[in-house]
Amino acid sequence: MLTRIDHIGIACLDLDKTVEFYRATYGFEVFHTEVNEEQGVREAMLKINETSDGGASYLQLLEPTREDSAVGKWLAKNGEGVHHIAFGTADVDEDSEAIRGKGVRVLYDEPRRGSMGSRITFLHPKDCHGVLTELVTAAPPDATDH
Image (cartoon, rainbow, N blue to C red):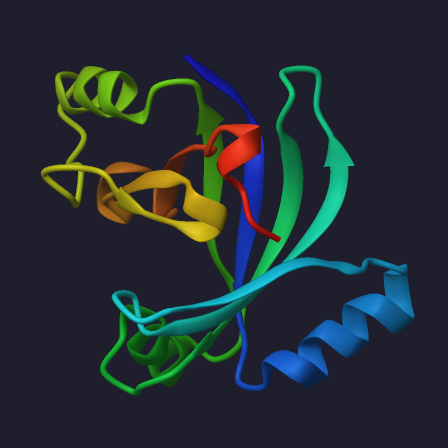
């Protein structure tokens, strides 16, 4: 069962400049940064709030590290802006299979590693009314490195 909005992914051309905008404008601070070589992105997670299920809600700022990455291609086509929405779940495997059973295309056969050690998969935007949707199971608290 989906429990929260885990994050909103925002594609940007310059991560440092975009982080500074969110810091100066809204007071959001960077909670975590990393480079995900597999997905070809450099990212910053800005924590918005804690949630009742022990998770949190974030803005995820994504800068492509290569033009042929999914985010790089998306930026070339669409420009900067909201890239995807991610819902938190206690079990990404179970929920993605249940959603697949309802006829929604799940983009990965097996969930992959996401931000902060999470497990993720994506749902096809054409099956989700034009919205690229991510399912996220957060890493256990002792496994998360900031």
